[in-house]
Amino acid sequence: MSKTRKNKCKFFLVTTSTTHNPGLDRFIKSAKTHGYKPSVLGMNENKSRGHSKGIMGFGHGQFGFKLQYLLEFCKKREPDDIILFTDAWDVVMVNDCSVALKIYKSFKKDIVIGAEKICMPNIWNFYKFNWFTDTFQY
Image (cartoon, rainbow, N blue to C red):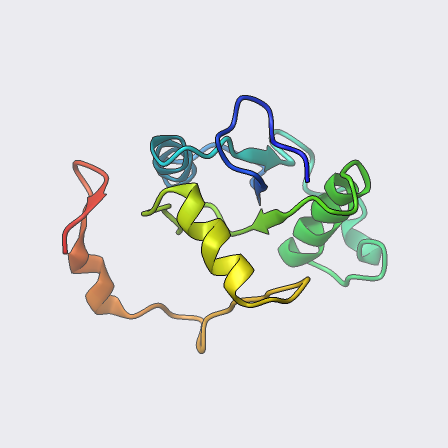
């Protein structure tokens, strides 16, 4: 397993975004705070690339772009590299990257996929986050 560039994590933290926004900035700040070196794929790219016909068989819309960028990124990695692929605009990293690696290894599987039960997050989590200091309050 290769160690990422000047990154204390033994895996790659990857997300996609074609534009900057406060959510992306918050994601990057939280990642760096906890020892990650995030890679943002698709920055400043034209969203219409392949949109009318879908992208590489992944269908239409934003999700197709995410999969295309991830596939291109994975092709440049070693087979044993670990990649943590996540949303960016509505995600913050709250633990050191060693915790994420430990949790991943606890599954004892090559691929681990996580997703929300529903598309809308629990509104009560909003109140746990201090939007002015970028830290969670527990």
